[in-house]
Image (tube, rainbow, N blue to C red):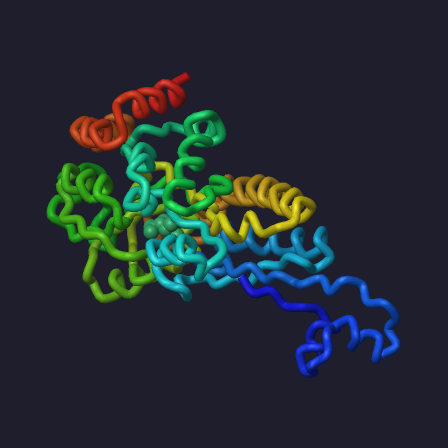
Length: 339
Ligand code: EAX
C-alpha cells in the first residue's frame, strides 16, 4: 500500500515547512487536512481480459469515485508479482495488498481449503453458492485470519475441464500416461494419478510455455480462462469433465483492511459486494462466449456413462480429503450440494 499525500503535502515535502504553513504561505487559507490517497496494490495470475481482472477494474473505479480518490487500486496481472503461492505469501507479509487466486493453492496455507478440491463433488452453480455463500464457505474464509490473511469474497474461476494436445479424450484410458499439469495442490495431483495420467504441479504463469514446449500434453481449467490465456494455441481438445469448481477467493492483508477509516471501510465492503456480483455475472456467461470464439478447438461432451467412468475413481480421493479436513466438513458440503 502506498499512501500519497495530496498537493499541499507534496509541496511541503520539498520544504522544512509543515503542510499547514505551506498552505498559509501560498495564501490558501487554513488548509483542509491533507487527505492522503492510498493506492492498493492488487495482483493476480490471469490475463487482463479475464473476468477477475475486469472485476478488479470495476472495483477500482467504484472505490476511487466513492472515496473521492482516497482509495484506488493498482492492478498487476499475469503473475507479474509472482505465482499465486507467492502472491498469497506477499499478502501475508504485507508486500502486496490484495490478490485473487485459485482456492486450490490455499490448501498449502490452510488445509481446510482442501475440502473444496474433491473432484466431481459440485454439480452446478446453485449448489456451489449454497456452500460458498452459506455457513461453510463463510467459516472457511474466516479461517484464513489465523494465517494472516483476510478473505473478502469468493469470485468465480469456474468449472474445470480436461484439455490436451494429443487426442480427443473420452475415458481415463485415453488419458493414460499423458504428462499432465495440475495446480500446486496434493489432492489434484492424487486425483489425476488415480485417473491414469502422469501429473505434475506447475505455477499457472509458466503453463503456456510448458504446453508450447511439450513439457505437458494436458492440463485442466475453466474454458473461459483457457481462452483468456490463449491456450487454444497449444491445446487442440477440451473434454467437458466439470470435475472441480474453482473459486477465486479475493484476499487482502488484514492490517491494510483495518487501516481504512470506518467510512472508507464501509465503502470498501460495498465495493467488494458489487464487484463480486459483477464478476460472477461475467463468469456465468464467459464459458459459452469462449467456446464460441474457439472453433478450432474440438470440445468433447461426455455421455453420462463416460462421465461416470472418470467420477467413479474418486472414492479414495474423497476419503483422503476427509482425513485432512474432517469427515463432517466434507459430509456437510455434500449434503448442501445435494440439498
Ligand atoms: O488463475 O492455476 C490454475 O489453473 C488456476 O486456474 C489459477 O487460479 C489461474
